[in-house]
Amino acid sequence: MKRKENKFITINSISELYKISGLPKPKHPLVGLIKLEDVSASINEPVSIVLNFYTVSLKHCLSSKMKYGQNYYDFDEGVLAFMEPGQIISDEGDNQQPKGWWLVFHPDLIRNYPLGKSIKNYGFFSYAVNEALHLSEEEQIMIEALFKSIEREYNHSIDQYSQDVMVSQIELLLNYSNRFYNRQFITRKTASNELLTQMEALLNEYFNSEKILDKGLPSVQYFAERLNVSPNYLSDMLRTLTGQSTQQHIHNKLIEKAKEALTTTNMSVSEIAYQLGFEHPQSFSKLFKSKTNVSPLEYRASFN
Image (cartoon, rainbow, N blue to C red; front, side, top):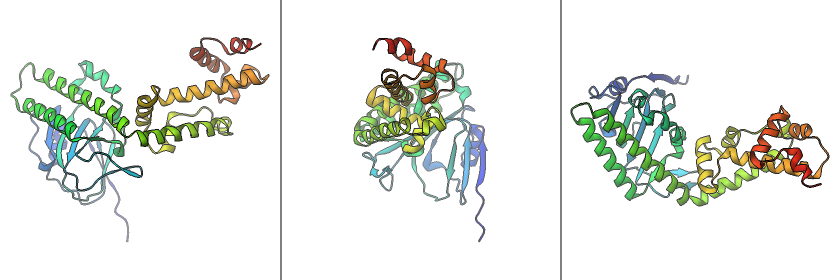
C-alpha cells in the first residue's frame, strides 16, 4: 500500500492560522491568543506546517509524563514551548485535544521596540520540542496569570497604548520563561552533568583523533547533533553549569592543545595551527592572543 505523502503548509499571517484552526477572525492582525481547547480543526493525515511568526504555547492536563532522554521529566504540571518564524512543526493527526494557551505574534508587532532586537537573545525559541520548559505547580500558576493578563489586554478595545502594553506583557512572559529555564537546568542537574561529561569526552576524542585534520575545527552543531540536543539548548545548559557556552568550551580545549604543542614540541606556529584545524595561521594566532593576552611565540618564549 502506498504511503500517504506528507502535506506541507505555510502560514504567513495570524488570520490564516485562525482560519485553519476553525476560529473566528483575530481581534488584531499582528497578535492572537488562542485557547487550545477551542481549536476545532482536525488533521487526519501527516502534515508539516511552517509558521512565519513567533509562538508561545502552554499545554497542561497532560495524559502522561514526558521523557527527557531516558528519564521522566521532574515536572508534569505544564509544558511551555516556543517557536520562532520559519520553524517546521509536524502534526501526525493523532487527534488528541490539548488544553492551554497559544500566544502567536508577528515579527512586525515588535519590530520598532527594543524587544524586536533582544528577542534573538531568548535562545529557547530555537530549542527542540523535547527541550520544552516543564513547569512546577507554582510556576504554572504564575505563567497562567501572565496569559490571563495578556488575554485581558487582547480583549481590550484598541487605543494608542494597546501595542505598547501588549509588547511589554509579552516581554514579561519571556523574562519569566528565561528564569524558569535557568531553574530547569539546575533541577535537572544530573541530566545536565551527564551532558557536560559527554561533551568533554567528545571534545577529547575530536582533538585527540584524526578528525581535526580531516574535518577542521569542530562546530557547535557537530557536538549538538552527537548529544541529540539543539545548539542553543546545549550552549544555554553549559553556560548555566559552567558560565561558558559551547563555543567557549571548544576554544578552551583548542587553547589547551595549543599550549601543549608550544611547550612540548618544536613545531612552528603554522604547523601547530594546521594540526589544530586552522586554514590560516593568522586566525590561530589571533584567537590564541585573544584568550591568553600573548602571542603563541611569546607564550613559547616564556618557557625558555
